[in-house]
Image 1 (cartoon, rainbow, N blue to C red):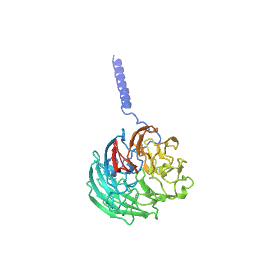
Image 2: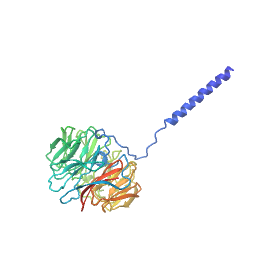
Image 3: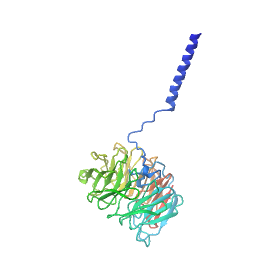
Image 4: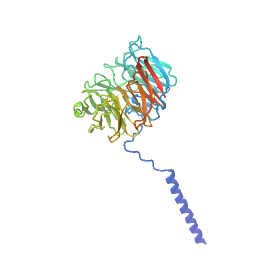
Length: 415
């Protein structure tokens, strides 16, 4: 009898242990492996949780957003500006911070300077405008976690403005910042001036260091873009330079290093489009025409077609979308192979962007903003009443962008 009792107890204990093991396996499964080329969203503490605090959405300039973009292609609101003779590029790329969409606008009737503009993100009403000294600006604003907004003008001024549109501090530099600035994970600001000098400032405007790149500034397409780890930056001018956050030059790549593979439509010493950096620290230059490893040693030509002056994007699967001179968009996978190419008559001097569903957004030469899926199928189109330049901004379900045409200067919100 005791023997049978002992056997029953052993059986019950064994069943319990087996059930426990099965339960542990079922409630704590291994996370699924991510496919090769998968792109993670990189936290950047200095920028906080704003949906679009910097041009291209992040300091790697991937133009990839972690939320859905507009689904319907319908106008929510638009704001009109009085203007003299509308130029093609009289807006900077917008950013979003809290309840505001913020951008620089210039070419206003009767004004000899530009403005940092803040509109209400829901209604499109003007909240405030802050006058800049210079008539023009090509340095889009940056909004940091603390609520400070940085921008610059072509008169050589660097500004820090709060969320009420009030000046916090201002620096006047010997040469203007006419390109795209960037910020590290600690909140230090980096700017590349026309005289070839890179400046680093802390959050209160104190200069940390300068680095003379020997008059290496290229054009307003020059830019500073960060590595995924935030420990180095890549700067395009008349060469590609890798710089540490302490101002140490790590390596440089000159035009002559690329001449054998440069497309015929790209002029020497001109770095078309802003650089883009993926999670593996590959740098995409010339609108996505060429890929360079983070140590500068490996150079891969992604297409032999002439590319256009269009900033590319990288979706979460690692696909790169490149605008070609022919008006086509070329989709290239992480291994460098072509997924597809379709002629959408894409407009140059603008950007391709994507959302977390890998839906792609871009502007075409017929003055439409377009949405396609990652297979190139058109989802919707919206007529902008003018040409739109620079990169739009996305906020959950909405797009913000400008247009300039016969109806003047417009700033629009599309859902």
